[in-house]
Image (cartoon, rainbow, N blue to C red; front, top):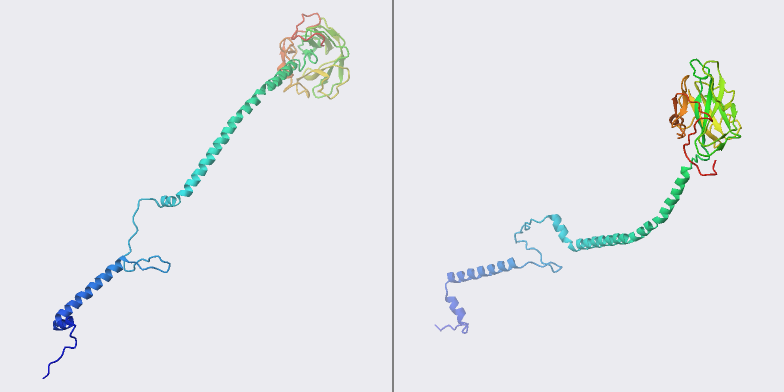
Length: 333
């Protein structure tokens, strides 16, 4: 039998491996396989696949991690998400506030102009000075020295009636100023409470400052005492329960008219006169008392209800002591 030749004379490892037992080879194979699997798993755990855009995608085999808990308010996160815009808005608001402050400052700086306007107050003061002049004019304004020097002072309307003190009705006029007033061309006109002016008493006397003029009227009967010292006599009978008397600076009949600059004084007295001065009528006189202007004939607020009262008859005349209520400049009257 011839000797066999080794077909792999240079491969000593192979020849040695053949000598190893099958179990040993199997053990080596299993160990090598296990080591490869461990390396692959470790690589997969640390590497994430890359998508088409180049971004790594989450590993499907990795357990998803829950989001970290935080104490921050989501609204705060939203605000923090755009800090720059908020800061810009804040800066804009600050700028606006600063701008408004500057405008306010400009307004304050403009106050000197307001002060300049106030400096113009001397003009306003001048105007006030003019007002003072106006007030001076107002002192004469109703201009009592030109329009209300002479007024109706007293009315007695029960002459000759039952219980009357005097037989005749009478009227007293009074020059309240210190200057003489010429009544030439003037008239005293009478109207019933609800009627028109139809009775006229022409006047012609000159009343010195403070003087009274006693005008005797008609008598209903002989009841009562005769009226002494009358300055003027007229046949006009006054209604005891109410009527209207007007002192006019001319002799034209007023008829239904109750107003006008020509009417120097007007008194509506008694029951429902259609005309009177002011807010209300004067009271009605009685058989023993006459209707008189308050303050010795000086009160004249152009309100019959406030200017007159009922008092004991006086019947003052030209011979009575004069009573001056106010003084006028010379030459007026």
